[in-house]
Image 1 (tube, rainbow over the protein chains, first blue to last red):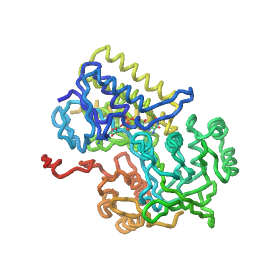
Image 2: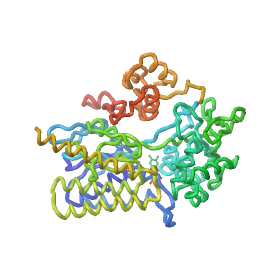
Image 3: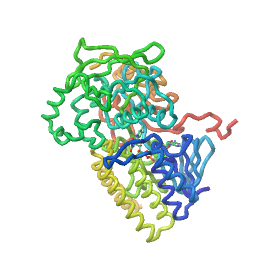
Length: 410
Length: 91
Ligand SMILES: Cc1cc2nc3c(=O)[nH]c(=O)nc-3n(C[C@H](O)[C@H](O)[C@H](O)COP(=O)(O)OP(=O)(O)OC[C@H]3O[C@@H](n4cnc5c(N)ncnc54)[C@H](O)[C@@H]3O)c2cc1C
């Protein structure tokens, strides 16, 4: 039996393991993927400083560090249930049951799709799937692709596909439907893109982003938005084209697009079929918190964190004894922040098992680091993330006050 | 607004938008009942693909479901496993 069990070998889980193993705790990490690294494995982008963020290398560094410590990484192990009995957690997997007094759930984020008629055809995939195929498995996705959905995730991955020589013909919006909401409104999309800062898909949006935050200027920009789209490294971003249907007999053969106005209304008679042999749908990310839910952890719905998140403190503890969380399960952010949060969680667990002043000092530094990395982060998936974090702090305060009260009453 | 309500929401169980809409209207039911009646989100992937879309759709049909509690409860097993695995024998 290990002293701590970590679910998820992404940046949060690996950093958490390193932090508590450095204080002598025996750690087991389990991950259902074939190799450790989580979503880091697919990441490759240039930072404003000109430096490259090579996720594969970052993962390698972390994994090498785990090898010098009492950390056992088990890949290809999928957790399907988790329960607490007395003082121990029982973690059920396809490789049997793991037991441990502490668990750190670092399962990351999942993608959501925006259904478009025809999205069940072979050749349609989530944008993340195209990233994994290209950067992790090194398989060519197809010859001619169309991305549906214009958001930070889509542009980060578009850039990676372009570097790998994968041809993306255009980026368009999903047509307005009862399911697609803001995603199909050019004005809303442009607003979100201008808040993306460094990751904004073109120099115009990046440099002009302050101007573009002014509503009237944004409206004007949309009015004069080039019909053929704005080129991003050669791929046109067509904010005024919407995907009405993905067509094909046995597999994707093309996408029917229509011209839309600034509010996303389809201009009738403009429908036209564009050839493609694959389609990537970029909806967005949400915290993958199913195991925390199964364990009985209370949740809070905070859209600025990406949806439903398990209630947790700044130290990454949950109201459930012995259960900690870190990384994207607590809110959608970049890989660097997940690493910083993992360190906090690891140190908090070390504190819980053997409280001492030295660990506490490190914990305080780690907490500061999270804030630092967050303010400097070149990627922010949700512009209002800081508000979301504050909201959770307030929830935790309330929760722990209530806990105190209960302890007094009972 | 797109006219095509035959769009599939739950891929595993092939549940369309209009089926969800009609069921919600007819039975005026809870999110959970809507899931049980249509099987949306109950297929092989366990709702991994359609859950966020279902949440959105349910919010439209049955307002105020997006409370702090997760609208559609998660239940183990959260991954597809064999009866052998759950039953304790892997044969
Ligand atoms: C498609 C996609 C693209 C992204 N692109 C970028 C990007 O370009 N730049 C960036 O900074 N951030 C990106 N992110 C955000 C990314 O989530 C963070 O960068 C970071 O990887 C989060 O770290 P994490 O440790 O919380 O989770 P992850 O890195 O996602 O690691 C979680 C791990 O948990 C495992 N796991 C989950 N459930 C189970 C289970 N039940 N049993 C066993 N193992 C399980 C998974 O296999 C995975 O390896 C992307 C996210 C996604 C989903």
